[in-house]
Image (cartoon, rainbow over all chains, first blue to last red; front, side, top):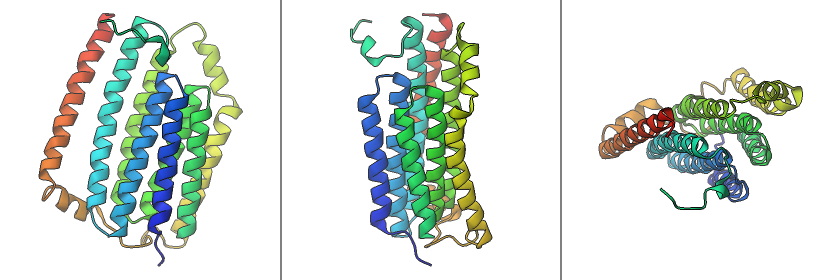
Length: 102
Length: 166
């Protein structure tokens, strides 16, 4: 059976990563920025899986599991930070918190 | 098999474009979930069923539940009820549902042609991944556990500050 070519899979990963980066740069809502980060991490995972499938090796899936771990940790801490920030000044605008005050 | 990959990839890209252009966070979350499910189907077609299962369970399941939970927590107010009613309108869920239906049709077509038992390419199953994970990658697993512990402590600390109202 024909398998998926390497370049198609990597193209999908690149498009998703670029979309995530565009979302991160365009949106100013912290929730949307975190979601765009998720899209970028997921694109990285796709690239790892595609490369692992190309050489039929389990290493790609292991790197994907590590990316998954990182994404879960990042979301847990990021969402807690968003809740804390929303409690201090009730907005989700990233530009609103531009003063480095403790 | 290639058609399955291409349709899944198109659904993933389309759902992601819709996600970053939605004004409402809940609509964006719906599209993001569809995008992750499409990525899971891509993993399956690529011969990584274990990664596909993890993508559905952890990404589309656990992480999205966290997002939904926080979105709902941030929306406690007078306008919350009206907002909920607006979210239940067909225009909110018809797009993600159509894309998810497309993925379901793909899965059905795979099952009908026997593709579920034999995906394209070489399948690297959960057993091979597990053997490599606790073999040469033992140190990476330890580092991942450090990372998870750090995330747990940080989330607990920040969550305690939220509860205190600090």
